[in-house]
Amino acid sequence: MNRFLSILTRFFSILTLALVGMAITASGQTSGAGSHADGTLRVGLWTLWHDKALTAAPASSASATIRSCESCAARVFSHPIQIKAASGKVIAGDGDPAASVWLGGALQLSAHGETVMLHNPVRVSARSGELVLAVTLPVESYVERVVASESGAADGPESLKALAIVVRSFALHQAHGHADYDLCDSTHCQLLHWNGASDRRAAAHSATLSTAGETLWFHGQRAAAWFHQNCGGRTAGPAEVWPGKSANAATAMPWLVSRADPYCTAHGAREWSATISLADLTAALSAAGVARPGWKTLTVARRGESGRAATLLVGSTRISAEDFRIAVGRAMGWGKILSTWFEVSRLDSAQGTQFAFHGRGSGHGVGLCQAGAAAMSAQGHDAGQILAQFFPGATVADEASGTAWQSMRAQAFNLETLDASDGQLLPQLSQALGEAESRSGLQPAGTITLRSFRSTEAFRQATLAPGWVAAFTEGNWIGAQPLRTLASRKLLAPVMRHEFLHALVESQAAPSTPLWLREGLVEAWAGDPVAKQPAPRLKLDQADRALAGADNEAQSKAAHDAAAFYAQRLLDRFGRGQVLAWLRNGLPASALAAIQ
Image 1 (cartoon, one colour):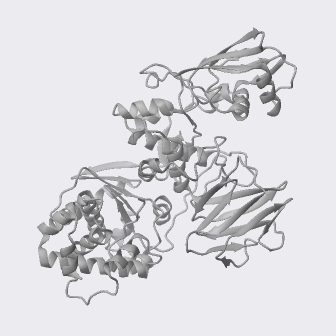
Image 2 (cartoon, rainbow, N blue to C red):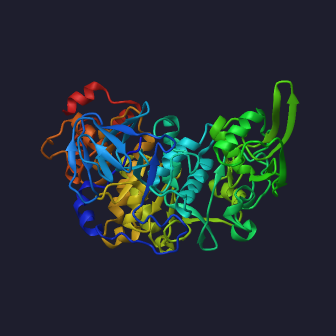
């Protein structure tokens, strides 16, 4: 579960005042898609459908909002409303036609038999009598959803990290040809399942969070990136698949060259075969506007460096082999022509003319091969080594600044930072970890990673943490606002001690351990004892709910105060050793009764 763990409560107001307004917008050239300095992307929803109407409703018992213009005041609606396309306008409920409507809050959108739950703003407009939906997603939420949608069971943690970096680079480093949004949700851009892929979300979340803000660069410039399912043993250069993208791929994109991939074929190359009738191919190519009916022959006119078909001769018409693959896929499904690396022959019989294809690989073949990356991850290669295999010469760097992350190892933690001077803070960080170990009686379960972001805004965009949070911990990963900022305000030691305590407690907690106990122990050990304070207003179940989803700083503080009170009472009555045993194995009802 994506949970944000907040800093020591007594520092909330201090940090809010001290850090507000400190976001830094880094300068730098961008290629194609824009810098997205606000940390969001507009993503097309249901772009392969041609819906003329949809139903919008508040999710569960929550309320949703609607605006008929971008500057209009939002109106709350609590019952389902229908939104219809009327030529180039939209009509929401019984309202007047408008160019667009904006939906907000917790939403449930339904059309063509599908329902999507969203907590992100949605702009609904119309073109030619069809609805156009654009969802504003944080960049990192988009990356996580795509990684979950595009990955598979064979992927390991490192191949998922590499995929996350490529997905982010693809989204931010090039234009994608859409007028109403930055990216669509189909394979034209990157596949995004709005529903489903739940079994992949936890792994995708971890990979996205640990690479937050990282993209590919080449010699100080942002680098375009693609990925595909299986290269068949050799990747392709972009010019042989999309001739219009580069007149000379070796010069324009030297990090995207055709090269052998021994990892993809370690257990044999993926081969495929298909037989398609002349009539079906004619219909598919005609529908796509690629070739007119009447042709009888189909041959490979030119191959690229990788061996893939680059140009086909359809009768007397030359067409791109990739255009051919896309046309057949859209008309007959993507399981027919899996790649452009194929041989084709004509078969004539009494039943008519057919064309037999035999090929290898799956997808366009450019950039990261997911099968090869998964094999490398299984063999112990890290994300950097995987990316070096498929993007030779490219480096991973912070998207906003182009600066590479530096890794500094100390004691049982690893500091990742863009500021080399942060190395001077290692002694203070080590002391904070030592204090956390001493107070809790716990030891790290593996290496803790502490990532210091370049600015307050970069931290918020990467972690999606609310504005009152200076650092947060998830498992063995800690993300923090700039360490220099915390140090200058004398907050580095208490904040880091608090976060190290979270890492220690989370490494020992059983899945069933309530959130109030995990949070409360951290609060109790991080600061002064609170057992003598008056009993809090919140009961345990109320505190648990508020900790999981506080709407504001005041609610969060009240929940943390309550958790600290009850955890300290447990420690006072039963001792640290017994409480740690309950942390690992579950809290008995008798203990709960004793502290309430």
